[in-house]
Image 1: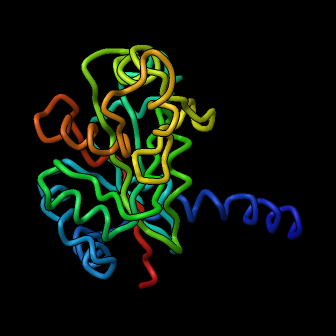
Image 2 (image 1 turned 45 degrees about the vertical axis):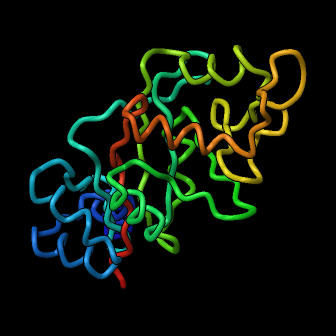
Image 3 (image 1 turned 180 degrees about the horizontal axis):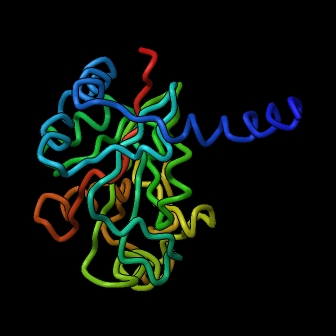
Length: 211
């Protein structure tokens, strides 16, 4: 009987950990320790809420009160995602969501599958996932891979690299090539962000509770 009860307790341990709760002060202080102060107003306004089911003793997870959280294929995707480490996320938010950083030799990938993108932030590299909304299903794919010859990587439902080492080289080849040639896709993407052709919002946060 004792062994039976012990086995039940062991089986319940993951769910006990997953059901962890945090006070408002705990959440705010964890964001501060992770250099995520810019997210505190979103939490305090109820835009971001604690994902208590998936928060553990080591990692705090917040999710947007409402978002698409889509897992689509590029050809019919209306929403795209990118996971950013903390400082990059802060810079993007502080730009009023108008400019993603494009450091030299960077890939800067975006993909239409939320579940794929979340793997790029972790408890050892906390960060934020952003959801980018476009005008209609397949809109971005049409701009780059139908109207122009930009190739797309297969990962994550189809991944474009916005950065200088991204997936732009193919855009400059063939009868539908960009003329003049482009240096990256990020310049166009940032212009669309700046004029609200593409919208952006925080949808997922992972912070290290041990910091």
